[in-house]
Amino acid sequence: MDGEVLTEQETALYDRQIRVWGVDTQRRLSKAHILVCGMKGTVAEFCKNIVLAGVSSLTLVDDRVATEEAISANFLIPPDENAYGGKTLAELCCDSLKDFNPMVRVSVEKGDISSFGGDFFDNYDVVVASCCSLATKKSINEKCRKLSKHIAFYTVDCRDSCGEIFVDLQHHRYSKKKLDENIKCQLQYPSIEEAISVPWRALPRKVTKLYFAMRVMERFEEVEGRNPGDVSSADLPGILKLKKELCEANSLNESHVPDKLLERLVMGTREFPPVCAIIGGILGQEVIKAISGKGEPLKNFFFFDAMDGKGIIEDISNPESGS
Image (cartoon, rainbow, N blue to C red; front, side):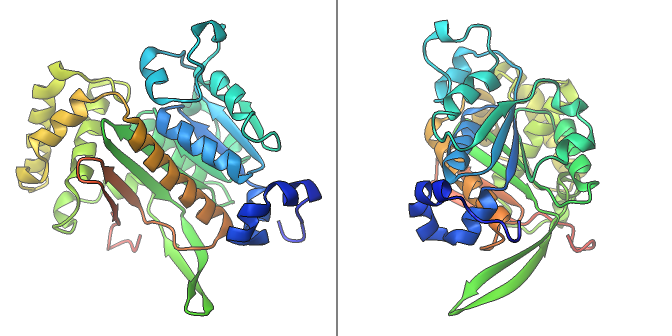
């Protein structure tokens, strides 16, 4: 990126945001390549934000067809079913995103993301995974980590009125302002597998209950071979049984994973659009910080629950490994 400058057209188009975050940040954004897997409502909000910010390219991966549930939270999908024409979710969203900023190359990659090799991910600076199994998230994260370049990896999930973001920036260097000077800082991140493998009993007592609830849901879907969010009220007894087993295995009081919270996550399978906007906005900000190297990024989980309106950052790392 060093030595490259913005074109006159880019400078004119992004004039207002250049005044906010500077020419250097805009220059870095204009050279960044983003990969997104899973076009949920939250991801649609993120894509809109990052396209408007002016990245170089955005590639979408999601071969699913549009459903009534997808339309309810994803504003990128046309409400007119006649416009679908057999297109996948990624293709429908791609068509809409191109209208937001013609200077950003928006494209679609077809195929199963879990089958893509490391060379494929080497083409990107940021990878965002959603709507995929825990095993797939771990696999993508591991492939990104094995590459020589540092790829920023994120997962995002919204269930009912709750949302979660996971961040892995590996070894990240950044600057932040303190009084009138820029301070150079660095953070070491664990992979998603390392983070969720930290024993529950080793975590601080005040870790949000939503962290544990999301892990129970994730584990249930993994054990049952379900797609993310493919649960119903009929699964609640099995999920509560699994919660009890996990709490006992981790020496954690069951009160840390309230039954009422799990019931909300089970019953509210659809995304809540206002929460999508909040989580998608936060994710967009974090990706911009990662690309620019300016501002302290969150480490390494972010949670939001519309019931209390709180956004919580949790550092779920293994203290023994230093990450």
